[in-house]
Amino acid sequence: MYRFLLTPRWWGINVFVVLAIPFCVFMGSWQLGRFEDRVQDHESAKEQAEEQRGARGRDAGARPLDALLPVDKETSGELATATGRYGEQLLVPDRELGDKRGFYVLTLLRTDSGKSLPVVRGWLPGDASAAKAPAAPKGEVTVKGALQASESPGSNGVSAAGGLPKGQLGAISSASLVNLVRDDVYDAWVTLDKGDSGMKAVPATAPNNTGLDLKAFQNLGYTGEWFVFAGFVVFMWFRLFRREAEVARDARLGLAP
Image (cartoon, rainbow, N blue to C red; front, side):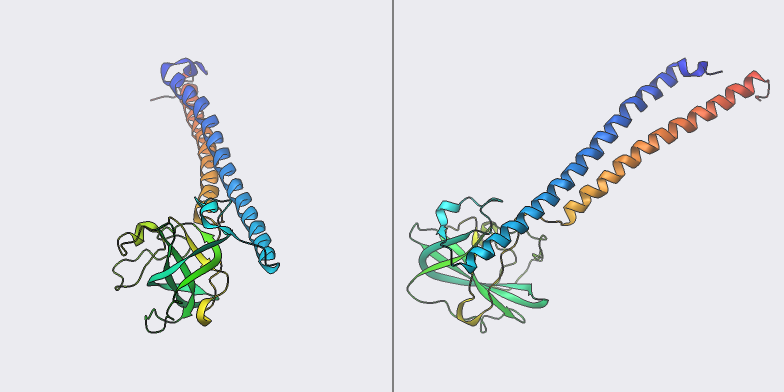
């Protein structure tokens, strides 16, 4: 009755099923592992942020900027210091702080190395306006703040909209600044631990790909999809098998048309 399983057609179906099910299970397990890694990174980032806040409360010393570059998961959020003179100032609109909409005041700090460091001196409420933004201090200054990696448009609340007015910046990154300023810019930026000139300090954010963001839940969704695919393969094999067995039975009983 089940001799049809020995036909070339069913050999191909069976080989496909035998290979497809382990592949789906493997891919589902891999996606689940990616989700668990992101959860672990998120927890580690939270612990690191708590440690850094505690260190700031104890007035712990910051490290020189060059000692923390390039920015990675370990150095993102670390307190960095840099010395130089403030230069060109830009505004970063549509940034929220404490559920209020406002803008960052970003000023380039030209260091002794000749490169400029983007420094977010603080946050102000309302629409971005150069008239509202306090002027940067004159002369040589030493800044201290949390080191941050370049932003990516469309992630972590960063606007991906273009066509901003002159003097405004969508994402804080060297790639964005290269088209706006002549300076050679660091591929990093600093947010001051204390807001300058009465502005509110901008808190440091977790490094990219460490939070429970959309990508993390995409991994979780893909996990479910792969396991569903594995179940679907088994279901379709059983359905085809039952239909073929019924056809064979009907043929054996002389009921087939």
